[in-house]
Image (cartoon, rainbow over all chains, first blue to last red; front, top):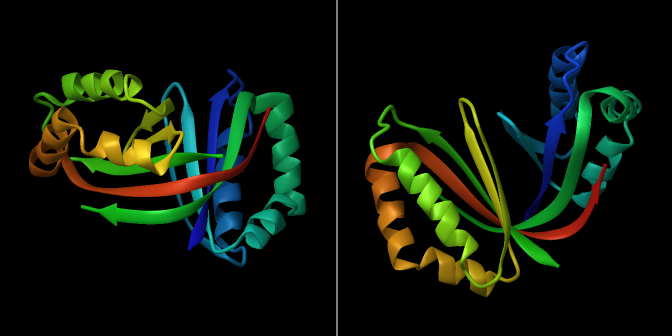
Length: 95
Length: 95
C-alpha cells in the first residue's frame, strides 16, 4: 500500500522562476524519505502525481521549508488555481 | 469519500483512430453511473485521472463493451505501455 498525491493546476502567464522552481522541487522531492516516484504532464492543465510510502512522508514534504516557499510563490504568482488530492492506492495493473 | 483512477501512459506513433476514440471514451465515461469527473494532460507522458463514486462504478466502466474494445485497441496499437492505479481519495484542498 502506498499513497498518491494528485496535483492538478492551471497556470498564470507568468514564466519567471517557474521552470527552475519546478525542476528544483522535483529534485528536492526525490530526496525526501518515503518518496517513491513522480509523473507529470501539462498542456492546458497540469497534472503531477507523486507517490509516497506514507501519509507521514507526505506531511513532512508539505512542510519542507524550501517547498513551503515554493507553495507561497505558486499561489501568489504561478498558478491561477490548483487542487491537491491525497489518495491511497488500493490496486494497480499495467500493460 | 470517492475514488480516483490514475491512468498513465506512453503512446506509440500510431495516430489513426486514437483522438476519436479518446474523445468518445470521455463522452461515454461521463454517461456512466457513479462518474464524477475527469482531468487529462499529455506531453511525453499522458496522465488521465477520472473520479468515481465507488469501486463498483469503476468495475462497471472497465467492463463496458465499447470501452473493452478500446482497451484492446489501446494495447495492440496506441500505447507502448500504461499503468492504472485505483486509489481512494482521503483528503483534498485547493487554491
